[in-house]
Image (cartoon, rainbow, N blue to C red; front, side):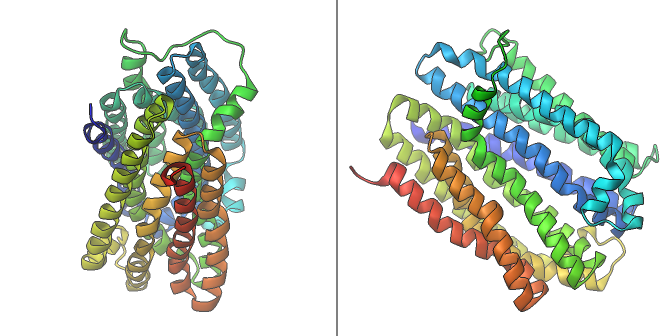
Length: 433
């Protein structure tokens, strides 16, 4: 199969699956805005960093272990059978830590993230319930990554879409007919990854699967070895949490809870964009890992080129949509028709989304670097966009321009990082020896 056909086999399905994840988060936010109002959105936005950490750990273990598995499989190595079980073991151990913290200290977690007494009251049940299911989120990431890298992108997509559709339906039923409010939203979100794991198991337990459960002695060093290649996936997931926590803290000092609610609107809409770029990255990675394992550098270049063209095209389309329909998009979650919230969100959407021209390059590029075992390059570029640059620009630009500076921090951070990503990619794959 040609590189183009492989790209079309993997990437569109992964984009669709990732859009499914982002849509259920949007629907979750929409239902909360209807049931609870601005305080509910604020509470949800304040605990999003915890979500991001759990998802990031699952992505790091899952993607990193699956890359090691894919490379070992392409080289016909006996070592490939140990990565799946080892990843599940350590994912479970880490997940249980979050479970205990969520059950025992939900109020303290929300207060630590900046919630006042009203927000703590609204968000406690939500935080306790979704954190109790932390291992399930991590298992879902691991299973999905291995299924995708084992040549079954359709099953991975079905798992993602199936769990997302369940979440949307359960959200509505539990929040409104049953009347559980925020607790219902949390329960729907918490149960959905279990369905994703079950769908993935239809491939893992089948005869055509190369992914096997194997009785092994858990190896922490193997976890570290795998996680090195999952660092870009980790930062891609956790960067949203870091941005949310940083922006929440800054915005609370500038405009208070209403500004945080406006940022919640922008952040949730941007999840769709990030999901699409993650779809390009997740779809490109198994192909790149295969060609890297085979030593075919020319095909690696073609995968990179297709990934970049796809990302830039999507970014331009998104920016056009946001500029044309910023007002109706901003008011989707403005159930109270607050004109100040709408004004903040409209400006935020227009400025924030400029950054996706560069974010697409960074997300797809770091995924390709990880697929080629270029852990240092992927780590450096990922840390720049997820931590260093975004925090630096958020504080500097907000001090200079207020809320407008907050919105511009994302484009500035992604723009600087894109230069670094391109340099690493050039040295790794494009430079002629």
